Amino acid sequence: MRFVLTAISGNKYDGDVYEVVLPTLDGRIGVMEDHMPLFSVISTGAISVRKNAHDPDSAMEHFATYGGAIEVSDNILRVLVDEANLPEEINEQEAREAMVRAEKMKAEAKDQTSLEHAQALLDRQSTRLQVAALRHRRH
Figure (cartoon, helix red, strand yellow):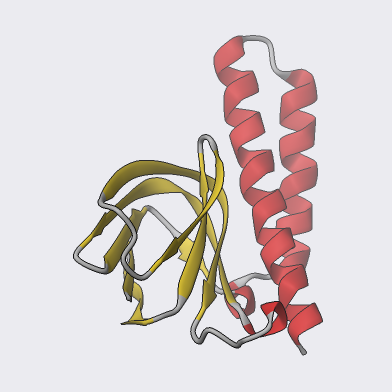
């Protein structure tokens, strides 16, 4: 199956893979060769890519993403997101500091819009830290 991950900044991945696990609004789903046609929304979370059938979980490649859309058809999985980060692109110290700021924003939120914005920032930084931690397990 071919997997194409495109962010606003350009293509982040384009190649043949065995399996891709994606965060959706209904939970994580796996997409493999001959998957039924699908169009869906993805949520903030990690996209995990297994290149070969016998690769262990520790060999999977991970991307931190913050929502977008997926389309599966003709053994091609296309994912379009605003942003996608590989673990080595994430500065953990900056992510931790941003998380502290987001927690403060959430605690001080005076309306639903401010609260939702702060929660989205918290989710984004949490995902970045989760994906960065996967880099440490891999090495």
